[in-house]
Image 1 (cartoon, one colour):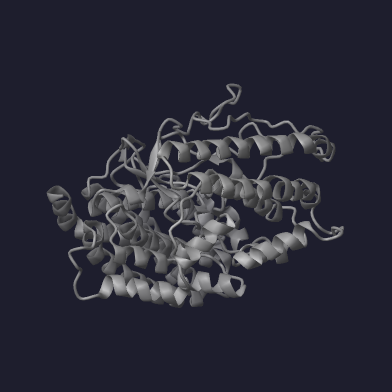
Image 2 (image 1 turned 180 degrees about the vertical axis):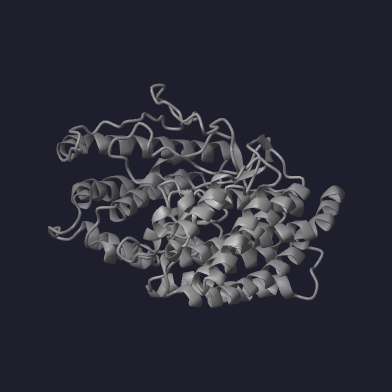
Length: 557
């Protein structure tokens, strides 16, 4: 954010955002990207300051851009970009700020069309000045391009500024096994291996089939409308998880309601769950799938142990009505076999696998009973900071436990760890809490918001303690005044139940994680899988429980 906008937000003052604020946001985005690139070396201190308050952020800019020299151990990207960033701040934004103050003062109390003209002028001028800045620095920047191994910096795939197709390059051959014309609740298509020779970070190569224009959840017109959107987004989260990725950034901007929806999509199913039920940590592939052989315990590597489950999984028919019975029976038989052989630890693993499979089955049944078919009302998006959930996720050398997300929507333990700079391993439970905070935020942030609700929304952006106090005040006051919006009144009983469910999940997570914290990776993965499925299952059960009341309210509105 620009400094004036951020200060207004922090102290709760009204503020009219203008094109100038977006020009500042471009600058901060560029600086942030330079600091957070994958080849950064000694910039962590600056990065932490940029995430701080307004004064800390401004001090960080001065330290980054206006030191006498750049240390040799700083990244090439930072050294290359610093002259442009200095010009951007001094020769572009500073004059724009001064001219904006004069121009806006001259029209502030005049006709709307004059205000609009000032907006248009600074929108065009801001982009024009930036284009001139790029042109000025182009000779130096292009001379510092570091060639790739293939000796070219040309992209392998061409995208437009606002691409509607998944691919703009007709030479790319699409994977026939993926239905690109449909959306599976926002599950991303991973194209990192298509047409790429030295592929970039896989997260940068995830894209969505187009679903047309979208809205934010604050535009939902009833509590049931909001619940349906949250439900569809949570199923998108689980679809992504079953492909081997954890989102880690659930918030109001990453869940989008499909405008003029719903749209057709592939039927939701949890029948790929057996690909997650891996005991061998080496069995996870780059797509998050597992081989059937990995479903046998390492300690049961004899043909008797490995061959049994391998054979059962190989004969599973996803489309058959007997899929769930066959899967659960195979896991039950294997648990019994390991118990008989005295391998209690291995038996515990198979029992936990049974729990995951049973929850996946129950989830599919409730989804069917709720009438969720092939129509999608909302998607989950913004997969830029997803994490691949495999053995490397638990390896300190591979995963530095850097946290991700928006503070206002983070779980309390995650947010505390971020604020005091402690390492933290994000889990599916953290994303479950983010869904709750997103739901509460959207119940408040609609166009019917009262003065009191506006105050609550501001306080939800405050400190951890202030956020928790505000949540309790919202959900646990004895009565709701008539002046409070219908969306909040409709959502409050469900949100109270949701909060209680999360408290139970917290306690069970602590017990489960403590039991595997110092054990093998495959056991940790199974705990992750358990709480991923259980968290979404609890949300779906809540929606099913409250559906009669919510739909009747929606019909009367």
